[in-house]
Image (cartoon, rainbow, N blue to C red; front, top):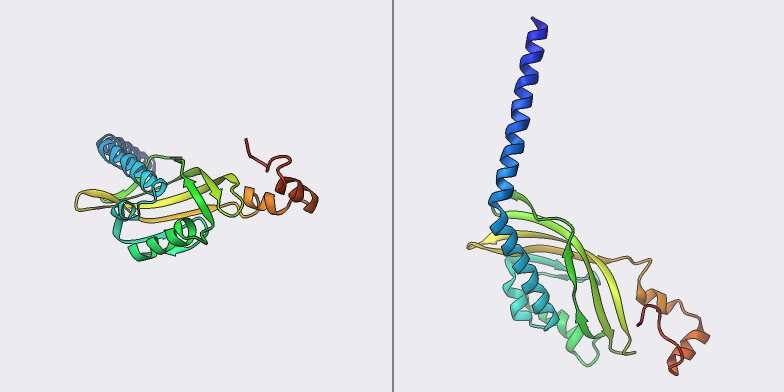
Length: 194
């Protein structure tokens, strides 16, 4: 009798597992339109950041959002985005002269429910520093939470970061005084420069 119960439980578990896998596969097929919309969203975000269009960037964000920038500044509304752009990119004392993003996702968005998902990936961002004119490639990682609002996918949360122990800005700061002097008069190149 015990053996029959064990076999029955095993069969039910196998059926449940098969049903769950089939449902997951069907959900994956049904989500292709969502994946295409999310790829377009990533493209829109990249274009708006590269062109410094804060209005276009705000249009990609959910009504309630949090965006943690690569320098760990937390932005939660359109005004904070505009202020951040001025401080970092457009003001006369800004740190960066130009910036171009090159994001890629490591995974397809994983959906938590019909209107929520998350994704993560990397980006090899290219910065031209205002003070030195030096161009650096800064590898970064990102994680994003996306939500569907009014039938359109938007970013609800994104966190970006760099390896604070290994990045091109620290490499330049770690150069010897002699090397910095040679670079300052145009002899040699900064690490990572073409």
